[in-house]
Length: 112
Length: 115
Figure 1: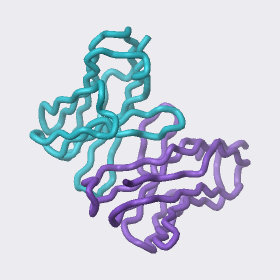
Figure 2: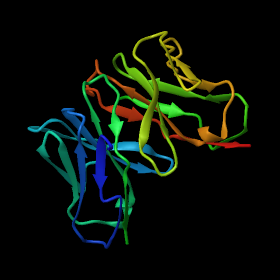
Figure 3: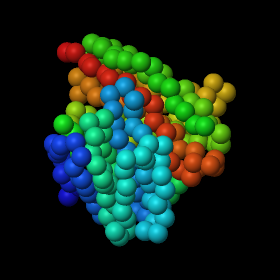
């Protein structure tokens, strides 16, 4: 089984709808991250969490919110989706501040 | 702030050709450096890493050396295969600075290898 899972893998939604992307991990890591990937822009950090009670904004948090329900679960919400939020979204985990990150398979989100 | 600049792609090579993908960085602290690879339809996976100056990371025939004097971490492979076709990302984690271990990514380089 995969260590970092994301659901759904693909989602098409309409402008103005609320949508939640979910991430679960079995690696036992405290640190979890949400990124979005756009062509030619690499990955940009949306939110990150260093433990259940610690949530921080990344470089592009506007229009997004997160919830860390447990050590293993970190959800990303779009309260009112807009077309420029169409992107590939990745969840990642890490063990320490200087260690590698482990990525989920991604969620492809299309907002029409 | 921290930043990573990769050579622009796409890069197209024939099988068994030599590969170099350039990566330079700017960081306020003493970063760890990474190369991640993304195969079609998949998430990112770590290819190699280096945590201090002059370290060489290597994996699957790929190598990169942490050069502090030139702030570079170029990726090389002596003989590429079709199966190496993917998107490659250079990244840094600045544990000693103010970014608390967050990764900063380059824009990615698409590599296509033809038989």
